[in-house]
Image (cartoon, rainbow, N blue to C red; front, side, top):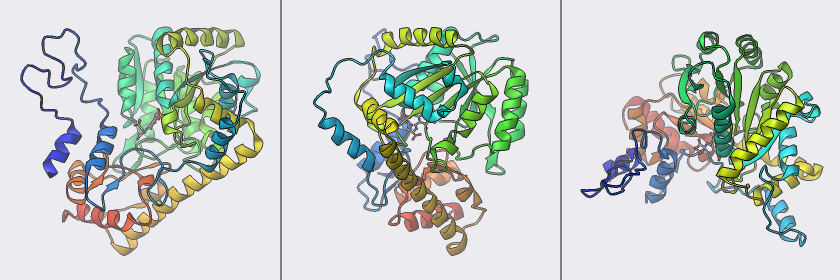
Length: 438
Ligand code: KET
Protein backbone atom coordinates (compact mmCIF):
# COMPACT_ATOMS: atom_id res chain seq x y z
CA UNK A 1 0.00 0.00 0.00
CA UNK A 2 2.72 2.38 1.07
CA UNK A 3 5.00 1.71 -1.87
CA UNK A 4 2.08 1.86 -4.28
CA UNK A 5 1.41 5.38 -3.11
CA UNK A 6 4.98 6.38 -3.87
CA UNK A 7 4.95 4.86 -7.34
CA UNK A 8 1.71 6.68 -8.01
CA UNK A 9 3.42 9.93 -7.09
CA UNK A 10 6.40 9.20 -9.24
CA UNK A 11 4.08 8.54 -12.14
CA UNK A 12 5.40 5.05 -12.96
CA UNK A 13 2.69 3.70 -15.16
CA UNK A 14 2.66 -0.01 -15.84
CA UNK A 15 1.50 -0.61 -19.41
CA UNK A 16 0.91 -3.79 -21.36
CA UNK A 17 3.53 -4.88 -23.88
CA UNK A 18 3.23 -3.02 -27.17
CA UNK A 19 2.29 0.28 -25.57
CA UNK A 20 4.57 3.20 -24.91
CA UNK A 21 5.12 3.25 -21.14
CA UNK A 22 4.85 7.01 -20.94
CA UNK A 23 1.95 8.06 -23.08
CA UNK A 24 0.05 4.77 -23.31
CA UNK A 25 -0.26 4.96 -27.11
CA UNK A 26 0.53 1.92 -29.24
CA UNK A 27 4.27 1.82 -29.95
CA UNK A 28 3.82 1.96 -33.72
CA UNK A 29 1.94 5.28 -33.61
CA UNK A 30 3.91 8.12 -35.15
CA UNK A 31 2.79 10.84 -32.80
CA UNK A 32 3.59 10.16 -29.20
CA UNK A 33 2.64 12.31 -26.26
CA UNK A 34 5.68 11.28 -24.28
CA UNK A 35 9.15 12.58 -25.22
CA UNK A 36 12.13 12.81 -22.92
CA UNK A 37 10.64 15.20 -20.38
CA UNK A 38 7.06 14.05 -20.28
CA UNK A 39 7.27 12.68 -16.76
CA UNK A 40 9.70 15.22 -15.44
CA UNK A 41 7.36 18.12 -16.10
CA UNK A 42 4.16 16.11 -15.57
CA UNK A 43 1.32 17.30 -13.39
CA UNK A 44 2.85 16.00 -10.16
CA UNK A 45 0.97 18.48 -7.99
CA UNK A 46 -2.34 17.14 -9.25
CA UNK A 47 -1.13 13.54 -8.89
CA UNK A 48 -0.44 14.38 -5.27
CA UNK A 49 -4.02 15.63 -4.87
CA UNK A 50 -5.33 12.44 -6.50
CA UNK A 51 -3.22 10.26 -4.16
CA UNK A 52 -4.53 12.24 -1.17
CA UNK A 53 -8.12 11.80 -2.32
CA UNK A 54 -7.64 8.04 -2.78
CA UNK A 55 -6.13 7.65 0.71
CA UNK A 56 -8.71 6.33 3.19
CA UNK A 57 -6.77 7.22 6.35
CA UNK A 58 -8.98 9.41 8.56
CA UNK A 59 -6.33 11.91 9.62
CA UNK A 60 -4.71 12.39 6.19
CA UNK A 61 -3.47 15.91 5.45
CA UNK A 62 -3.04 17.59 2.06
CA UNK A 63 -0.31 20.23 2.02
CA UNK A 64 0.33 19.84 -1.70
CA UNK A 65 -1.55 22.11 -4.06
CA UNK A 66 -1.58 25.84 -3.46
CA UNK A 67 -5.31 26.20 -2.94
CA UNK A 68 -6.83 27.98 0.04
CA UNK A 69 -8.84 26.00 2.57
CA UNK A 70 -10.79 27.37 5.53
CA UNK A 71 -10.29 26.19 9.11
CA UNK A 72 -12.64 23.24 8.39
CA UNK A 73 -10.38 22.21 5.50
CA UNK A 74 -13.06 23.24 2.98
CA UNK A 75 -12.57 25.23 -0.23
CA UNK A 76 -13.78 28.77 0.52
CA UNK A 77 -16.14 30.53 -1.84
CA UNK A 78 -15.42 34.16 -0.98
CA UNK A 79 -18.57 35.94 0.31
CA UNK A 80 -17.95 38.72 -2.23
CA UNK A 81 -17.90 36.15 -5.05
CA UNK A 82 -21.21 34.71 -3.83
CA UNK A 83 -22.67 38.21 -3.98
CA UNK A 84 -21.30 38.89 -7.47
CA UNK A 85 -22.59 35.52 -8.70
CA UNK A 86 -26.08 36.33 -7.44
CA UNK A 87 -26.03 39.68 -9.24
CA UNK A 88 -24.93 38.02 -12.50
CA UNK A 89 -27.55 35.28 -12.15
CA UNK A 90 -30.31 37.89 -11.96
CA UNK A 91 -29.03 40.06 -14.80
CA UNK A 92 -31.52 39.51 -17.64
CA UNK A 93 -29.40 41.63 -19.98
CA UNK A 94 -26.52 39.13 -19.99
CA UNK A 95 -26.10 36.76 -22.90
CA UNK A 96 -23.54 34.11 -23.80
CA UNK A 97 -22.04 35.69 -26.89
CA UNK A 98 -18.30 35.52 -27.60
CA UNK A 99 -16.09 38.00 -25.79
CA UNK A 100 -13.63 40.03 -27.88
CA UNK A 101 -10.40 38.07 -28.62
CA UNK A 102 -8.45 40.09 -26.05
CA UNK A 103 -11.17 39.66 -23.42
CA UNK A 104 -13.71 41.74 -21.55
CA UNK A 105 -12.39 45.32 -21.80
CA UNK A 106 -13.74 46.44 -18.41
CA UNK A 107 -12.00 43.43 -16.83
CA UNK A 108 -8.61 43.88 -18.50
CA UNK A 109 -8.48 47.63 -17.79
CA UNK A 110 -9.44 47.19 -14.13
CA UNK A 111 -7.00 44.28 -13.75
CA UNK A 112 -4.20 46.47 -15.12
CA UNK A 113 -5.06 49.21 -12.58
CA UNK A 114 -5.08 46.64 -9.79
CA UNK A 115 -1.53 45.52 -10.41
CA UNK A 116 -0.02 48.75 -11.74
CA UNK A 117 -2.12 51.20 -9.64
CA UNK A 118 -4.54 53.81 -11.02
CA UNK A 119 -1.65 56.33 -10.91
CA UNK A 120 0.59 54.30 -13.20
CA UNK A 121 2.29 56.53 -15.75
CA UNK A 122 2.39 53.68 -18.29
CA UNK A 123 -1.39 53.30 -17.97
CA UNK A 124 -2.00 57.05 -18.23
CA UNK A 125 0.13 57.15 -21.37
CA UNK A 126 -1.71 54.19 -22.91
CA UNK A 127 1.49 52.09 -22.98
CA UNK A 128 0.03 48.89 -21.54
CA UNK A 129 -1.28 46.10 -23.78
CA UNK A 130 -3.63 43.98 -21.67
CA UNK A 131 -5.17 40.69 -22.72
CA UNK A 132 -7.48 38.35 -20.77
CA UNK A 133 -5.95 34.89 -20.39
CA UNK A 134 -6.71 31.40 -19.14
CA UNK A 135 -5.72 32.23 -15.58
CA UNK A 136 -2.07 32.72 -14.60
CA UNK A 137 -0.89 29.67 -16.52
CA UNK A 138 -2.40 31.05 -19.72
CA UNK A 139 -0.81 34.44 -19.05
CA UNK A 140 2.60 32.78 -18.61
CA UNK A 141 2.08 30.81 -21.79
CA UNK A 142 0.94 33.78 -23.88
CA UNK A 143 3.75 35.94 -22.49
CA UNK A 144 6.32 33.23 -23.26
CA UNK A 145 4.89 32.64 -26.74
CA UNK A 146 4.92 36.37 -27.44
CA UNK A 147 8.59 36.67 -26.42
CA UNK A 148 9.51 33.58 -28.38
CA UNK A 149 8.06 35.19 -31.51
CA UNK A 150 8.92 38.83 -31.06
CA UNK A 151 11.65 39.37 -28.46
CA UNK A 152 15.05 40.16 -29.87
CA UNK A 153 17.06 37.60 -27.91
CA UNK A 154 20.76 38.23 -27.60
CA UNK A 155 21.88 34.85 -28.92
CA UNK A 156 20.05 31.72 -27.84
CA UNK A 157 16.38 31.91 -26.84
CA UNK A 158 16.58 31.42 -23.09
CA UNK A 159 14.86 32.52 -19.91
CA UNK A 160 16.39 32.78 -16.45
CA UNK A 161 14.24 31.20 -13.75
CA UNK A 162 14.78 31.33 -10.00
CA UNK A 163 16.19 28.14 -8.50
CA UNK A 164 13.76 26.76 -7.47
CA UNK A 165 10.59 27.99 -9.14
CA UNK A 166 7.02 26.93 -9.87
CA UNK A 167 7.77 23.71 -11.73
CA UNK A 168 5.40 24.50 -14.59
CA UNK A 169 7.57 27.46 -15.66
CA UNK A 170 10.05 24.97 -17.13
CA UNK A 171 7.45 23.26 -19.30
CA UNK A 172 5.76 26.50 -20.34
CA UNK A 173 8.97 28.01 -21.73
CA UNK A 174 10.25 24.79 -23.29
CA UNK A 175 6.91 24.44 -24.99
CA UNK A 176 7.50 27.63 -26.98
CA UNK A 177 11.17 26.92 -27.74
CA UNK A 178 12.74 29.02 -24.98
CA UNK A 179 15.37 27.18 -22.94
CA UNK A 180 14.93 27.57 -19.17
CA UNK A 181 18.05 28.10 -17.09
CA UNK A 182 18.30 28.73 -13.39
CA UNK A 183 19.65 31.70 -11.51
CA UNK A 184 20.57 31.23 -7.83
CA UNK A 185 17.70 32.29 -5.58
CA UNK A 186 17.21 30.13 -2.51
CA UNK A 187 20.08 29.42 -0.17
CA UNK A 188 19.50 26.19 1.77
CA UNK A 189 22.15 27.21 4.30
CA UNK A 190 20.27 30.31 5.43
CA UNK A 191 16.82 29.10 4.32
CA UNK A 192 16.64 32.57 2.77
CA UNK A 193 17.53 34.53 -0.36
CA UNK A 194 20.90 34.08 -2.08
CA UNK A 195 20.93 37.76 -2.99
CA UNK A 196 24.60 37.90 -3.97
CA UNK A 197 24.19 34.90 -6.26
CA UNK A 198 21.08 36.43 -7.82
CA UNK A 199 22.82 39.77 -8.51
CA UNK A 200 25.88 37.99 -9.85
CA UNK A 201 23.77 36.07 -12.28
CA UNK A 202 22.05 39.28 -13.47
CA UNK A 203 25.50 40.80 -14.01
CA UNK A 204 26.91 37.80 -15.87
CA UNK A 205 23.95 36.99 -18.11
CA UNK A 206 24.10 38.22 -21.71
CA UNK A 207 22.71 41.76 -22.04
CA UNK A 208 18.97 41.93 -22.70
CA UNK A 209 18.29 38.55 -21.09
CA UNK A 210 14.79 37.65 -19.92
CA UNK A 211 14.51 37.12 -16.14
CA UNK A 212 11.38 35.64 -14.63
CA UNK A 213 10.59 37.27 -11.29
CA UNK A 214 7.89 36.24 -8.80
CA UNK A 215 6.10 39.50 -7.99
CA UNK A 216 5.40 38.42 -4.39
CA UNK A 217 4.97 35.31 -2.25
CA UNK A 218 7.61 33.34 -4.16
CA UNK A 219 6.53 29.81 -5.02
CA UNK A 220 7.80 27.44 -3.65
CA UNK A 221 10.08 29.13 -1.11
CA UNK A 222 7.97 31.95 0.41
CA UNK A 223 11.17 34.03 0.29
CA UNK A 224 10.86 37.48 -1.34
CA UNK A 225 13.48 40.20 -1.81
CA UNK A 226 13.12 43.17 0.56
CA UNK A 227 12.11 46.58 -0.91
CA UNK A 228 15.79 47.65 -0.77
CA UNK A 229 16.83 44.49 -2.58
CA UNK A 230 14.20 45.08 -5.28
CA UNK A 231 15.77 48.54 -5.78
CA UNK A 232 19.19 47.03 -6.28
CA UNK A 233 17.79 44.37 -8.60
CA UNK A 234 16.13 47.09 -10.72
CA UNK A 235 19.46 48.95 -10.90
CA UNK A 236 21.30 45.92 -12.30
CA UNK A 237 18.45 44.93 -14.60
CA UNK A 238 18.42 48.43 -16.11
CA UNK A 239 22.22 48.51 -16.38
CA UNK A 240 22.22 45.21 -18.26
CA UNK A 241 19.16 45.98 -20.39
CA UNK A 242 17.38 42.84 -19.14
CA UNK A 243 13.67 42.15 -19.55
CA UNK A 244 11.51 41.43 -16.46
CA UNK A 245 8.91 38.69 -16.86
CA UNK A 246 6.79 39.11 -13.72
CA UNK A 247 4.59 36.25 -12.58
CA UNK A 248 2.01 37.52 -10.10
CA UNK A 249 -0.17 34.65 -8.92
CA UNK A 250 -0.53 35.68 -5.27
CA UNK A 251 -1.32 39.42 -5.09
CA UNK A 252 -2.85 39.91 -1.62
CA UNK A 253 -1.62 36.59 -0.26
CA UNK A 254 1.80 37.78 0.85
CA UNK A 255 0.78 40.62 3.16
CA UNK A 256 -3.02 40.59 3.00
CA UNK A 257 -2.77 43.93 1.18
CA UNK A 258 -3.22 44.13 -2.60
CA UNK A 259 -1.22 47.35 -2.95
CA UNK A 260 1.70 46.25 -0.83
CA UNK A 261 1.99 42.99 -2.75
CA UNK A 262 2.12 44.92 -6.03
CA UNK A 263 4.93 47.19 -4.88
CA UNK A 264 7.80 45.44 -6.70
CA UNK A 265 5.91 45.48 -10.00
CA UNK A 266 4.94 49.12 -9.52
CA UNK A 267 8.47 50.11 -8.59
CA UNK A 268 9.89 48.42 -11.71
CA UNK A 269 7.30 50.19 -13.85
CA UNK A 270 8.25 53.56 -12.35
CA UNK A 271 11.92 52.85 -13.03
CA UNK A 272 11.11 52.10 -16.68
CA UNK A 273 12.23 48.45 -16.67
CA UNK A 274 11.01 46.74 -19.87
CA UNK A 275 8.54 44.16 -18.64
CA UNK A 276 5.39 42.13 -18.81
CA UNK A 277 3.16 40.91 -16.00
CA UNK A 278 1.21 37.64 -15.71
CA UNK A 279 -1.74 38.01 -13.38
CA UNK A 280 -3.97 35.35 -11.84
CA UNK A 281 -7.23 35.64 -9.91
CA UNK A 282 -7.24 31.95 -9.01
CA UNK A 283 -5.91 32.39 -5.51
CA UNK A 284 -6.87 35.90 -4.40
CA UNK A 285 -10.47 35.56 -5.58
CA UNK A 286 -10.70 31.80 -4.96
CA UNK A 287 -11.63 31.35 -8.64
CA UNK A 288 -9.33 28.40 -9.35
CA UNK A 289 -11.63 26.66 -11.81
CA UNK A 290 -12.87 29.79 -13.58
CA UNK A 291 -9.44 30.27 -15.19
CA UNK A 292 -9.39 34.04 -15.02
CA UNK A 293 -6.18 36.00 -15.51
CA UNK A 294 -4.50 38.64 -17.63
CA UNK A 295 -1.25 39.42 -19.41
CA UNK A 296 -0.03 43.02 -19.38
CA UNK A 297 2.85 44.00 -21.65
CA UNK A 298 4.31 47.46 -21.09
CA UNK A 299 5.58 49.23 -24.19
CA UNK A 300 7.81 52.27 -24.48
CA UNK A 301 5.18 54.20 -26.46
CA UNK A 302 1.44 53.94 -27.03
CA UNK A 303 2.07 53.00 -30.67
CA UNK A 304 4.29 50.12 -29.56
CA UNK A 305 1.70 48.90 -27.03
CA UNK A 306 -0.96 49.01 -29.75
CA UNK A 307 1.21 46.88 -32.04
CA UNK A 308 1.91 44.45 -29.20
CA UNK A 309 -1.79 44.14 -28.45
CA UNK A 310 -2.51 43.44 -32.09
CA UNK A 311 0.14 40.68 -32.18
CA UNK A 312 -1.18 39.22 -28.93
CA UNK A 313 -4.65 39.05 -30.38
CA UNK A 314 -3.32 37.19 -33.45
CA UNK A 315 -1.63 34.64 -31.16
CA UNK A 316 -4.69 34.35 -28.91
CA UNK A 317 -7.01 33.83 -31.89
CA UNK A 318 -5.15 30.71 -33.00
CA UNK A 319 -4.96 29.28 -29.50
CA UNK A 320 -8.26 29.92 -27.71
CA UNK A 321 -10.03 32.34 -30.06
CA UNK A 322 -11.67 34.20 -27.21
CA UNK A 323 -11.47 33.78 -23.45
CA UNK A 324 -14.32 32.59 -21.20
CA UNK A 325 -16.70 35.21 -19.86
CA UNK A 326 -17.97 34.12 -16.45
CA UNK A 327 -14.86 34.70 -14.31
CA UNK A 328 -14.13 37.93 -16.19
CA UNK A 329 -17.59 39.26 -15.39
CA UNK A 330 -17.30 38.34 -11.72
CA UNK A 331 -13.86 39.92 -11.25
CA UNK A 332 -14.75 42.94 -13.36
CA UNK A 333 -17.83 43.62 -11.24
CA UNK A 334 -15.77 43.44 -8.03
CA UNK A 335 -12.92 45.58 -9.34
CA UNK A 336 -15.22 48.26 -10.71
CA UNK A 337 -17.59 48.60 -7.73
CA UNK A 338 -16.03 50.36 -4.70
CA UNK A 339 -18.27 48.58 -2.20
CA UNK A 340 -17.65 45.10 -3.59
CA UNK A 341 -13.95 45.92 -3.89
CA UNK A 342 -13.78 46.86 -0.20
CA UNK A 343 -15.50 43.60 0.66
CA UNK A 344 -13.02 41.64 -1.47
CA UNK A 345 -10.13 43.32 0.36
CA UNK A 346 -11.63 42.10 3.65
CA UNK A 347 -11.98 38.55 2.27
CA UNK A 348 -8.34 38.59 1.19
CA UNK A 349 -7.28 39.72 4.66
CA UNK A 350 -9.28 36.84 6.16
CA UNK A 351 -7.37 34.33 4.02
CA UNK A 352 -3.95 35.91 4.51
CA UNK A 353 -4.49 36.25 8.27
CA UNK A 354 -5.50 32.61 8.70
CA UNK A 355 -2.28 31.60 6.95
CA UNK A 356 -0.22 33.92 9.14
CA UNK A 357 -1.91 32.44 12.26
CA UNK A 358 -1.00 28.94 11.08
CA UNK A 359 2.62 30.02 10.63
CA UNK A 360 2.69 31.38 14.21
CA UNK A 361 1.05 28.26 15.63
CA UNK A 362 3.37 25.87 13.77
CA UNK A 363 6.44 27.83 14.80
CA UNK A 364 5.28 27.86 18.41
CA UNK A 365 4.59 24.11 18.55
CA UNK A 366 7.90 23.17 16.89
CA UNK A 367 10.11 25.49 18.91
CA UNK A 368 8.42 25.72 22.32
CA UNK A 369 6.39 22.55 22.73
CA UNK A 370 8.26 19.86 20.79
CA UNK A 371 11.71 21.50 20.76
CA UNK A 372 12.24 20.07 17.30
CA UNK A 373 15.94 20.11 16.37
CA UNK A 374 16.97 22.96 14.07
CA UNK A 375 15.94 26.55 13.60
CA UNK A 376 12.33 27.18 12.48
CA UNK A 377 12.39 30.97 12.15
CA UNK A 378 11.79 30.61 8.42
CA UNK A 379 8.27 29.33 9.09
CA UNK A 380 7.30 32.82 10.30
CA UNK A 381 9.70 34.77 8.09
CA UNK A 382 8.52 33.26 4.80
CA UNK A 383 5.38 34.76 3.33
CA UNK A 384 2.42 33.78 1.20
CA UNK A 385 0.72 30.48 0.63
CA UNK A 386 3.79 28.27 0.98
CA UNK A 387 6.51 27.40 3.36
CA UNK A 388 9.70 25.75 2.24
CA UNK A 389 10.38 23.61 5.29
CA UNK A 390 13.96 22.67 4.45
CA UNK A 391 13.34 18.96 5.08
CA UNK A 392 14.88 16.45 2.67
CA UNK A 393 13.27 14.03 0.20
CA UNK A 394 13.61 11.10 2.59
CA UNK A 395 11.78 12.99 5.33
CA UNK A 396 9.10 14.02 2.82
CA UNK A 397 8.65 10.38 1.85
CA UNK A 398 8.33 9.34 5.47
CA UNK A 399 5.60 11.94 6.02
CA UNK A 400 3.67 10.69 2.99
CA UNK A 401 4.20 7.00 3.60
CA UNK A 402 3.90 6.78 7.34
CA UNK A 403 1.78 9.74 8.36
CA UNK A 404 -0.42 10.24 5.26
CA UNK A 405 0.71 13.86 5.06
CA UNK A 406 0.98 14.89 1.40
CA UNK A 407 3.53 17.49 0.31
CA UNK A 408 5.75 18.08 -2.70
CA UNK A 409 9.11 16.30 -2.91
CA UNK A 410 11.03 19.56 -2.44
CA UNK A 411 9.65 19.95 1.11
CA UNK A 412 7.18 22.69 0.24
CA UNK A 413 3.99 22.83 2.30
CA UNK A 414 0.87 24.80 1.50
CA UNK A 415 0.15 26.61 4.75
CA UNK A 416 -3.50 26.81 3.71
CA UNK A 417 -3.78 23.04 4.19
CA UNK A 418 -3.13 23.43 7.92
CA UNK A 419 -5.96 24.18 10.36
CA UNK A 420 -6.73 24.00 14.07
CA UNK A 421 -7.70 20.32 13.77
CA UNK A 422 -4.59 19.00 11.99
CA UNK A 423 -1.75 21.33 12.99
CA UNK A 424 -0.73 19.31 16.06
CA UNK A 425 -0.79 16.07 14.07
CA UNK A 426 1.36 17.66 11.36
CA UNK A 427 3.84 19.22 13.78
CA UNK A 428 4.26 15.98 15.75
CA UNK A 429 4.97 14.00 12.60
CA UNK A 430 7.28 16.64 11.20
CA UNK A 431 9.14 16.53 14.49
CA UNK A 432 9.49 12.75 14.23
CA UNK A 433 10.56 12.94 10.57
CA UNK A 434 13.28 15.44 11.50
CA UNK A 435 14.47 13.24 14.38
CA UNK A 436 14.41 10.20 12.09
CA UNK A 437 11.94 8.40 14.36
CA UNK A 438 8.86 8.37 12.12
N1 KET B 1 2.35 31.10 -11.25
C1 KET B 1 2.70 30.57 -10.07
C2 KET B 1 3.95 31.04 -9.43
C3 KET B 1 1.90 29.58 -9.48
O1 KET B 1 2.26 29.10 -8.31
C4 KET B 1 0.73 29.14 -10.13
C5 KET B 1 -0.09 28.06 -9.54
C6 KET B 1 0.39 29.75 -11.34
C7 KET B 1 1.23 30.73 -11.88
C8 KET B 1 -0.82 29.38 -12.13
O2 KET B 1 -2.01 29.52 -11.48
P1 KET B 1 -3.39 29.53 -12.27
O3 KET B 1 -4.27 28.61 -11.52
O4 KET B 1 -3.15 29.08 -13.69
O5 KET B 1 -3.85 30.96 -12.23
N2 KET B 1 0.35 27.27 -8.62
C9 KET B 1 -0.36 26.21 -7.91
C10 KET B 1 -1.18 25.31 -8.76
C11 KET B 1 -0.46 24.71 -9.93
O6 KET B 1 0.63 24.15 -9.78
O7 KET B 1 -1.01 24.84 -11.05
C12 KET B 1 0.65 25.42 -7.06
O8 KET B 1 1.86 25.66 -7.16
O9 KET B 1 0.21 24.56 -6.28
